[in-house]
Amino acid sequence: MPLFTPIALRAAFRRQLDQLRVSRLPRSAPSRRFQSTNPGPKNAADSAAKPKSKPAATEDPIPVGGTPVAPVPLWLRLGPLTRAGQAYARAQRKRPWATQVVTSLFIYLAADLSAQRIGGKEYVPERTGRNLVVGAVSAIPSYTWFIWLSRNFNYSSHAVSICVKIVVNQMVFTPTFNSYFFGFQALLAGDSLSEIWDRIRRTVPVSWVNAWKLWPAVTAVSFTFVPIEYRSVFAGVVAVGWQTYLSYLNRLVEIDEEAAHGGVAAPVTAALPAPVEETTFKIDAQKRRIAA
Image (cartoon, rainbow, N blue to C red):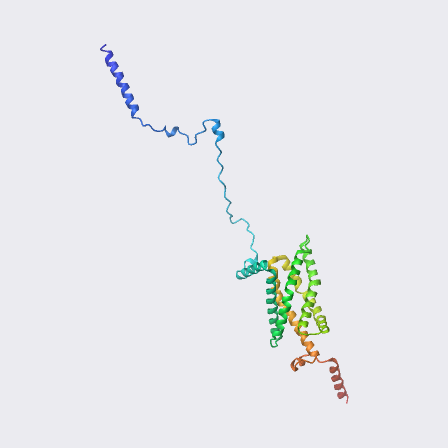
C-alpha cells in the first residue's frame, strides 16, 4: 500500500498535466501546410455540377512597324481642298440636281470672264448672261449622261471599258453638246435659222477635232482614278478651260459674222484680211504701171 500510493499520485499528476497542455493549445484551423489552394470536389456529382471557368479573352494585337497599312488616296491628303471636296460630295448626294446647276453656273461664269479677258475687248454683260443660260439648261442632261456612261459599257477588261466609253462619249455626246452650245448661243443672240445653222457648221467640226486632244485623257483618268462623287468636280476644273475655248471660238465667229454684215468698226476691219478680188485688182494695176 505505501508503494502504490506514490505511483498512483504520479499517474494522476501526469494526467492532469497532459489535460492542462491540451487545453492551452490554440483552437484554430488546421495548419496551412496541410491545406490545398484548390481543394478538389468532394465527389463526382459535385465535379459534374461545377461549371468550368472560361479562359480570359485575348485582345487584338497592336500593329507593329512591319504591319502593312493601306495607303491614303492623294485627294484625301490635300487639307482644305479635301474638306471642300468632301463637302461638295455630301451636297451632291443630298441634292444632286441643284448641286449640278450651281456648279454649271460657276463653270460657265468663270469661262466667259476668262474668254472675254483673252479677247482683249470691253466686257459685254449680255455675253455672260447668254453663257449662264446655256450652262443652266445643259447642267442636268450632262450630269445624267455621265451617270449613264459610268453604269454602262463595263466589261471584264478595264482597258476595253475605258476605250468604249471614250469612243461613245466623243462620237455621241461631244458633237451633240457642241451643236447645242453654239446653236443656242446664236439663238439667244437673235440670229435667224440660217445663221444658226451657219454658226454650227463653222464651229462644231473644229471644236470636235480639238475635243479629241483633251477629253479622252480626262475621261480615262476620271473613270479610272476618281470616285463617282468627285468626277463632276474633276471634270468641272477641266471644263473651265474648255468652256473658255468654246466661248472664245464662238466670239471669233461672231466677229466674222459682224464683218460680213458690215457692222464692224474700223480697227477690227483693218485686222481682217482683204478680199481676194481686191488684192488681185491692186496687183494688176501695179503691173500695168510698171509696164508703162
